Amino acid sequence: MATKKTAIFTLTERIDVPNTTEQFASIDLGSYVDVGDRQALQIHSVEYLYQGSTPSASVVAGLGAGQHIMTQLCDTNRGGLVYADDRALISSSVLHISDSKVPTDTTDMFPDNFGNGSTNGRYVVNDALYLYCKASNATTAHAVTVKVHASIVTLSAKDFMAIAIQSTAADN
Image 1 (cartoon, rainbow, N blue to C red):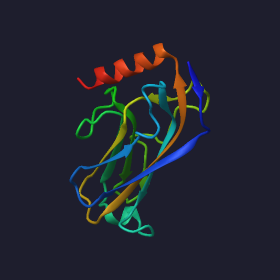
Image 2: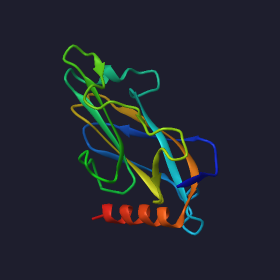
Image 3: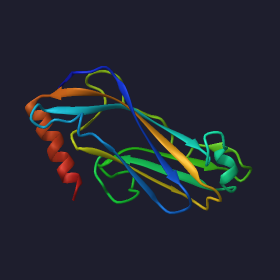
Image 4: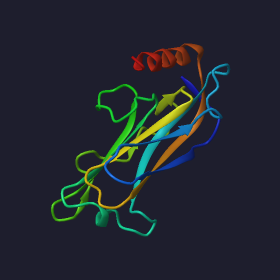
């Protein structure tokens, strides 16, 4: 299905979450995806790192008991958070702070791991990835960093076309 052109590398993007307003960021893939050469990005895994308002600040201190931060990575711009069955959704994460101020990820396990083999992974042929994040009742600013572990692959003409059609259908 795919021929690897590179070893696995990491793309990162940080999004600042100042309050309960939904925040948005994108990762430009224009240098990695090439339609003419049927070149795609193969995502192997996605990690989320939650921090407070500074790199040394605790994320727990800024969230009240029973609060959470939701984060999603999509390959199509949906304009906000989506349901789990949306075809554009690549990965999602929820960091929940319990009533006793203990952080947990039990409502949405992460990191999302798609495998490292040449046939394992999520193929992206779009020109960007979109990161959405929202905190509930944040008392101070937070930062969420997404780490996308990926490689560049060349797909067969049929496979590239199938992924492109699916991605276009996901726009609707």
